[in-house]
Length: 461
Image 1: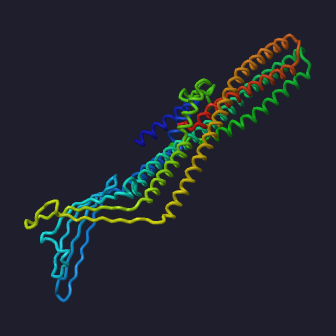
Image 2: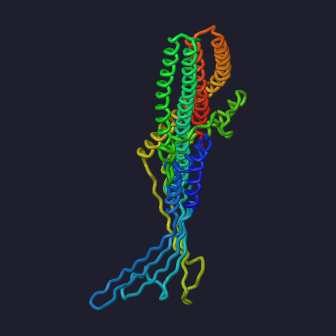
Image 3: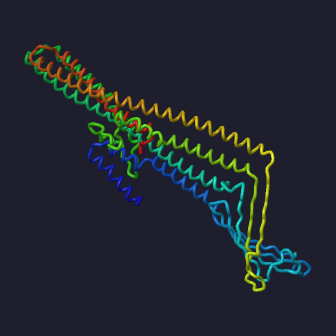
């Protein structure tokens, strides 16, 4: 199965390389399948399961046996054989079965057993302290809580990983699209320089125009080199999240390009404003940090129940039905061994103090939970507001870019008629370039904001 997973990963990564385009969805899929943090999150879940298994071990049946013998001056004083099986249960009582056998010349009459030994089956029950809860049951309940907490922490790891990888992709997208934009301007500037030189030769333009055209070309080339460096660095940064048995080389990564528009998977679509409050409430209830705080409260409450249990007196009853295969003894309910033990705590100052301290811990944890819920709610709301504002800005800037493009096209027509200068065209191109870069940045920001809403809600999985 693991081989198939590695093979599928290999095919995915190399299909990405062959396609030359790394979509956001495929990128996140590769992160989920191969990043070490995903393995770490699985280890947390496994650790929680082992914690439950360890706590259940307190309820495992146990066997004990002993032999006690005394021999002196060639006489066997006594030999005792004792064997017992204890059967703990998930409730207050505990069952047990045993077989005792004795022999010797000096046996205490009260320890005298039938020749064939004595079988017994019995039960011990705490009637007061330990009836509702005891240490073993408390530890098992807490083990389930710990496992649940580990599951929440596992989700938190994946949540942080997917957000960090999403931010890296968005920054790579912005850097790549920006350098591609400048690369296109270089081609335009080079073509304009060539056309200007030709016009000068024909006497249509003055010689100074060639200096202007060459300067524009050199300026665009310099800007492209800077943006290319940024794109290269962001590509390298992206490799932090692309792991696998067959890792992508740096050269292979540099051949990749992002999709034209970042497409967020439909599963992470945000609710509209009318449904946001209900979505926020549900998100808070499922946030890993909130779950962790609730589990901490549950652990403290279990401890409180156990501590209160120790305020009760001890009243333990043991009953053993005695059985023997020997025909000289009858088997009836009248053959039994009964024991009752009582212990009454007097001042209980230690126990009451521990209960008081644990109560304060519960109150403090509840306050921490309230603060954390408020902080998370504000963070989610802020990111959501940012997303909504960016949506409006993108619509506005798409119109702005379209307007600058129209002005540039008109200026080019005027230049062809000799009504304007290269400097004016260059300025129009600069305005269009700056607006286009701003639009790219806004598209990256809105993708990050959308993912940030889900990350703040702890729901990126």
